[in-house]
Every structure is written in structure tokens, then in C-alpha cells.
Image (cartoon, rainbow, N blue to C red; front, side, top):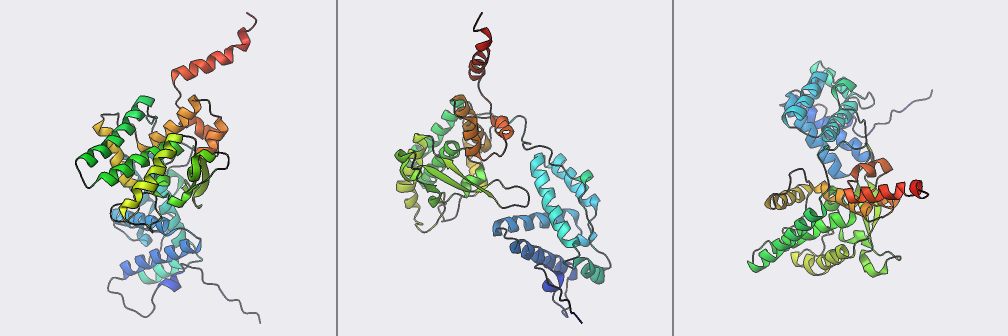
Length: 367
């Protein structure tokens, strides 16, 4: 007789539930066990701790909104939550779709027969989890770019004013002998790096000092000739995408070199890997970048439709206007499709007119 042994998958109910123990709050114990199991399943797939923790926090928020447990959730809960995210919180479509995707992943995990959560819930509570995410109550991924139609890059004058203002904050803090001089210098350099290498906010936050390297084709930049972006925007269910961004702006290289070599050591945490560190020795988070950006933007009375991502838009736009090859720009910013780069491009009227004249020149050459 051949005996078949069932392999227990990471995250299975029988691995997470404690048998023979009477729980004071069995519903909470089951929910916590589900989350532990989901965490184990994701870790087994190689997901980063930060990704797993962010997802768990969102599931707990959904649980609070629904005011029910996963074995009581219905598609109506998802429908009501989506309406709240859209109508009350006014979140962007791609943000809502991301949230819905996380709930879908958790829902698919707890109803997967391989993990045993359905019979465990049915035995304990007489109810079991069901699929709650469907096409009619979630946002489909229809296109690569779903940002606000009002999103635009800085004009060259606006960008110069913004960067100058960031530098002014350093001078003011130094003259006033304020404690925040180092943080102001860090932030001024950070915004220059976002523009100088065309980065997203989260990519910038996760940079380490060692991510800069030499480019044999540009020895004038020294150890800052290339930037290894390790946490590029990921596709659904995949790891963050890496890319190498070549340095093209000498003034940006000078700024980051000065910060790394002369300013960052003054924070006093030589063993911390992060490029952008806080006064308490932590890694600067994307939310803090956003807060400082908004403070500077509002102080300058710049339009509120300018966001940190507008700096990345500016990188694409101005390289295009300066005649840089589109394929090169596409590789620099990590776009798989040229159509994505095109959406990012907001060239000036002068550029468009010049391109038009070049396009028409052959047709009128013999006139």
C-alpha cells in the first residue's frame, strides 16, 4: 500500500491554530491566526517584511471598516469600502485598485482549500470565508498611467525657484544656528537627486549610500556615475524592479557628493546604510518627503497640482526638450513601454514648434 503524505503549506490553518486551548475571544484569535498564516505564506514566497507589514495593516483597516470577521465578509463589504475610498477619502484610482488588490490576495488565501481556513472557520463559527472581490466591485487595470489629468511637471522657472528655496532654508538655519540645519541640507539635496536621476518618491527614500557607483564612460563623475535603484515600481505580485540610472547632470552629482562626504557624517550614524537618515538615526520615509515638499511648495505659493512626482515628470520633459534620445530616457526612468514615457512628457510650445518645422521642412524643400 502506498501512503500519501500531505505536505503542510506555510500559512496552513493547522500550523497556526493552537489546539486544545480555550480562547477568551475566539474570533480575534482566529483572525490573528489567519494573519499569521498569510504572513508565513508571503514570507515563503520571498516578499519583503515591509511589504507584508503594509498589507497586514490594510487588512486590519478593512476589518475595522467592515466591523465583521473574514468568515462574515461579503461582496457588499468590499462595495461599501470602495465607495468610501472614492467618495469620502477621494483617493486616486490606482491607489484604490492597489488596496482592493491586497484585500483580494488575502481573500484568495483564506478561501484556498490548500490552507484549510474554510473548514476551520466552519467548525468554529458555523460560517466560512467566501470570495468578496469581483469585477463589478473593484477597479480594473485599464491603462499604465492613471494619475490625475491635472498632473504636470514644474516649469523651468518653478523648478529653479523650488530648488533655490530649499537651499535658502539651509542658509537660514545655519545663520539662526537652528538644530534643523542638517535636515534642511539633506532635504535640499534629496529634491535635487529626485530631479537629477528622475526618481519616484519611494525609490528615493529607499536609497543607500552604496547604491551610487562608477561609470567607466563618465569618469568625470567619480563614484557617482551611476545609481542602482533597487526598489523600482513593481508589477502586481512581483518583487520591486531594479534599474541602473546613469548620471547626466554634473551639478546634481556635485550636490550629492558634497552631502555624502561632508554633511551626512554629521548626523552621527556611520554604520547606517541609508542615504537619507533622520536626526534619530532612522531612514527618511516617503511621507516625510511629501510633508517637506508641500511645505516648500505652499511657502512659494506654487500650484497645488504640483506634487513630488512632478519633479520626475520634469526630468523626462526637459531631457526630451534638450534632445536626449527617447529610448535612453525610457530606460533611465524604468518604463517598459514608450507610451508611458510619452504620457510623462509635457514639452513646451517652443519645442513643439521646432519639431513641427523640422517635420515640415522636407515637404517644402522644393517650394
